[in-house]
Amino acid sequence: MNVLIPVDGSAAANRAVEYMIASVAWLKESPQIHLLNVQWKLASGNVKLFIDQDTINDYYREQGNAALADARAKLDAAGLAYAYHISIGTPAEAIVQYAQEQAVDQIVICAHGHGTLSDLLLGSVASKVAHLARVPVLLVK
Amino acid sequence: MLEMLNSSQFWVDVFKIIMIDLLLSGDNAVVIALACRNLPEAQRRQGIMYGVGGAIGLRIVLTFFAVSLLALPYLKLVGALLLLWIGIKLILPDEEHGEGNIKAEAHLWGAVKTIIIADFVMSLDNVIGVAAAAKGSVFLLVFGLLVSIPLIAWSSQLVLKLIDRFPYIVHAGGALLGYVAGEMLVSEVLFKPLVEANHALHWIVPVICAVLVLAIGKWLAARMAVKAEAVHLVDGQVSSNGQQSEGSKK
Image (cartoon, rainbow over all chains, first blue to last red; front, side, top):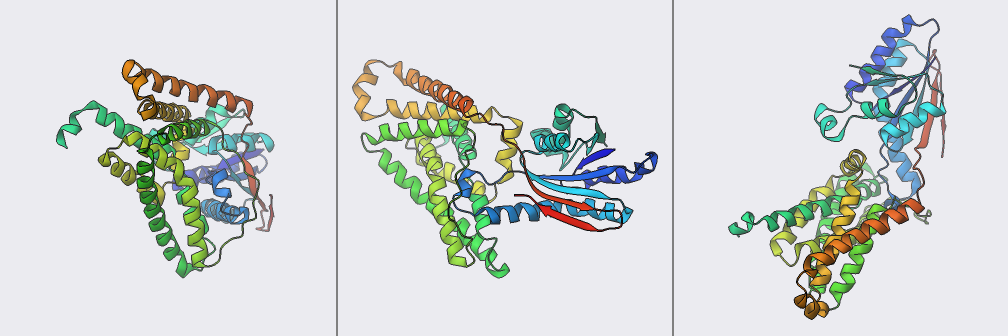
């Protein structure tokens, strides 16, 4: 079973990882876990006129690795195998795209990422993923 | 001053300026952060400080230049045409420029130079928009500058998230810029006799300009519609015994 867990580095997002670790025992075979962090595409065409692509990618990589760190530490501690991944784009769309490319069977995502207030104003990534995805989405509370 | 706060026109203008500042805030904050990345730790804060300071200073100078230029006859016409184009560009999807020959700056003044040049290029549309929307009111100009300062220093994901949540905000922004361009056209000295003869032109021209920006923008956007795919940056595997392998994709 292929499971995708999108994380943004928030404590809430990591609850999805904890849930996965706790529920591994329910499964007959241990699942293939994919951790995914999506970085907003901050560098528009204009920025690229002035900043070289390597610097931009280094920045995304640093931010992405920082966002993945806690989730990876939890999986490492649990001794589970996983793949980790950083993409650049719009979070919900990028998550769904990755799920399709990797033929993921289920997306496990925390219902709230960074803060309830910004969820309220800006919409939550989780609800958009649930709307767009073609595979079952498990919302972890 | 105080009665100004009571007129609805004033609040409409304030709203216009906030919208223009938000949507045309440029990517100054991103450039500042990225240009200073390759500096040694000690100089990074300095670079960011100089960069933000320089960007704000430049924005103020450019705004007052724009205002004095727009006071000249015929230049309002030029300004209005520019604004129409800026409005259309706002609706179009972000285009990828070919990678230029840019090298990362590893020393302080190099980074500051990059920031200032980038600011100059990226502030122009904002400055023209705010100058046009302020219609000569010094209070509104200063207000516009004040609103743009936190955006220069901090905005990064806010605008992206807003557009993701409310995609039509760019269409509203484009229409708004078209409207402001129309207002500028009717105040052009060249057309003064014409506009005075037909008072209705005061609102007909801005509305036509707003619709024009929307129509051209949507038409061009539909022609170049390519779905923005997410780019994969890092792919890594960790096996259950903790062994790690990583491959980076371009």
